Image (cartoon, rainbow over all chains, first blue to last red; front, side, top):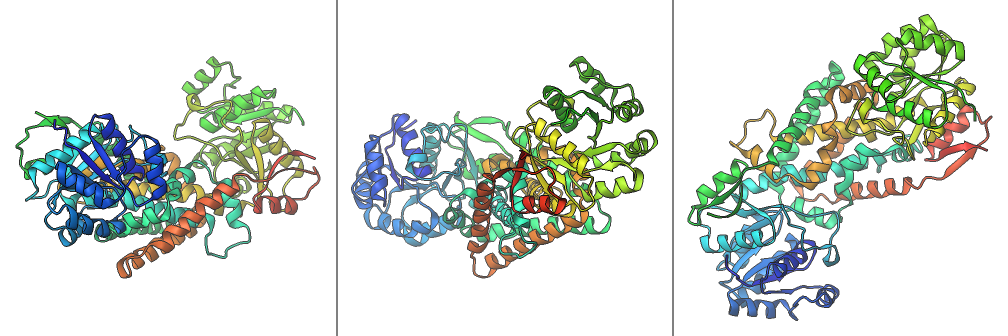
Length: 319
Length: 319
C-alpha cells in the first residue's frame, strides 16, 4: 500500500465520508469545498480544509496527491477548469455516479490530468457533510473504471484508496458501469417517482379525496418502493440526466415489460410471467451479494480487470 | 365493546395474527385451516383449532360469532360454499386485499350471509402461521367496507374487532378501496417485479455478464425498490389478478407517466417534472400518516362513514 496523500474537492455525503475514512486509514488528507458553512463544519470536526480549490490543488501538485472530485456532475466542469489551470498533470479520480459523461468532461476540460474514474456504490437518502461517516464505504463496492489506455499507476492509487476506505473494488468499462447503474440505481429512482406520483394522484383530477384515501392506506410496499423519492431532486436529476443514453435503454426495457404486463392483465388476466421474473431477479441479486472476493496481481491489464467485474467478482487487495 | 366470539378460517400470516390478537384482547376465538401442519402448529401454541371448517362454522352459527375469512381470494369460493351450507346467515367479514371481487363472491356463493368486507393494511414479506404475531395490526389501518346497504350491526362488529387488534378503522366504499390499493399496493408489486427483471437482465441476451455486473453493484435503491418482489409469487398473483379493473387503471397511469419521462429524457434530457412529482408524492404520504384520529357516533350512516375515509381520517372508537 502507498500512503499517497488525498485531496478531496467537495465535502458532501460521499466526499465528506471519503475524507473521514481516508484520515481514519492514516492518509494525509486535505479538502476544499464551495460551501463556507461546510468548510466551517469540517474544520470544527478537525479536518484540514484549504481556503480555496486552487490552494488545495497547489498542495496536490506539490505532494503528487490523488485528487478526488466529490461534487455532482453539473458542478464538475468548473472544477476541472481549475484542475487544468493549477495541477494539469495531477492524479485524478471522482466519486460521481456516471462514468462516460465524467470521462468526456475530463477529456474536454482537463485533458492532461491522469484521470481514472471511480464510483463508490454507497449512499443514503441524506446528503451533506453532517450526514457523512467514516464507515459509509465499509463492505461497499467501489467501481474503478478499467478502460483500455487507463493509467495503471493511478488505477492502483484509486483501488488502494477504496480498500483503505473499507470498500471492495469492482473493475468495469465506463460504458458497462453506466449501463449497470442505469438499471440498478437510476431506473429505481424514476420508478419510485412514478409510483409516488400515481399513488398520490399528483396532477390528476380523479375522485375528490381519492389521493387522500390512498395516501392514508399506503404502507409497506408503497413505502419501500418510493423510499428513494425522498432524495433531494437536484441530486437525482444530476445522476439520471447525466446518464441519458444508458437510462433511455433501461427505461425502454421497463416500459416494454410493464406494457407486456398490462397486455396480459387486460387479456388473460394473468401476471405470472411478470411476477415470476421479478422474483427470480431478487434471487439472482441475493446470490450476487456473495460474490467471490479475489486478490489480483498488480500487473493485471485493464482487459483482465474488466473481465473480473463483468463476471461479478470483486477485488480486495493485491496478490 | 362487545365480546363477540371470533371464528377465523385460515391461519396464514394475517388470519394467524388476527387469531392471536383477538385472544390477547380477551375474545373467545376458534379457527380452522386447510393445512394439517398449520393446525398442529397453532394447537401447539395453545390455540383452539376445530377439526374442520364445517365444525368451526357450526360453532359460529350456535354462538352468533363473527366469521373471518383469512385465505387468499382464489380459495374463497370453496369456503363460502361451506358458509352457505352450514351457517348461511352468519356475521361474516374477511381480510382479503380486494373488496369488489370479495363482495361479488359472497353475493354469488353465500348470498344470505351478513357480510361486511374488511382489509387490515398490515403484512410482511413473510407468510404462514409462524410469521404471525399478536402485534401485527398495532397502529395499522383496517379498512371496513361502508357501501350503502351494509349491515350496520356487523359493520360495528368488524370495527370493534379491528380496534381490539390495535388497528385504526378506515371506512371506504369497496370500489374506492380497490382503486386505492391498486395504486399503493398492487402497482408497487408490479413495478418491483419489472425493476428486478430489468436489473437482472432477465430473459434478455445483452452483453455476456452485463446482468452479473448490475446485480453485483445493486444496493440501496435497487434493494428498496424490489423488496416486495421477495413475496411468494402466488400471493402477489392472487392480490393483483383479483383487482384487475382498478389495477389496469393504475398501470395505465404509471405507463403514461413513465412514457412522458422517457419522452422528456430523449428530447430535452430533463426529468424534473417526473422527479419533482415523486418527491411531492412522498411528502403527501408523510403528511397523511399523521391523519386525525376520530371517535364517531355509533349511528353514523354509511355515507357519513365513507366520507371520513375519503378525506384521510381514521376511527379509533365510538363517541
